[in-house]
Image 1: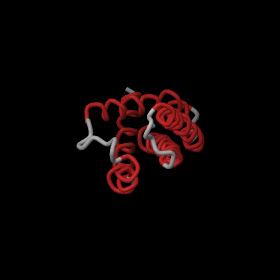
Image 2 (image 1 turned 135 degrees about the horizontal axis):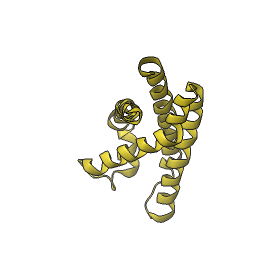
Image 3 (image 1 turned 180 degrees about the vertical axis):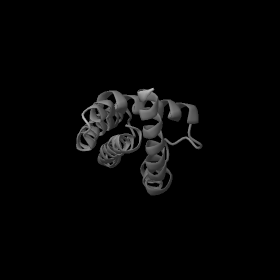
Image 4 (image 1 turned 90 degrees about the vertical axis):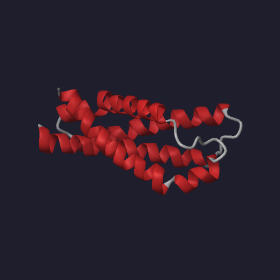
Length: 133
């Protein structure tokens, strides 16, 4: 039951933050650099699969331990590392194998992944400790 609660909290926070980023803030950037690669509308089943798996990863590697140790600061710090390494892996792989992958998008996405995972892990831990635990 603890995992389900962690997942629901993290999913809600993740969706709010990431959809604001993708739908409003970063859309012009992605159109400029990746417009030729974008699928409109997105393939939502695949997007949801990514969200579910990424959130499970954050719970396993960050959120659960942060809740166990009651450390929101741990969640923010370790979440930043989780986001940095996962998004960096994605970006560098794309840059290495996709001929038209724009170098300009690489630092933007890595920074975003770092901020996103840090925020989701930290806020999810805080919400859980404040209202559930």
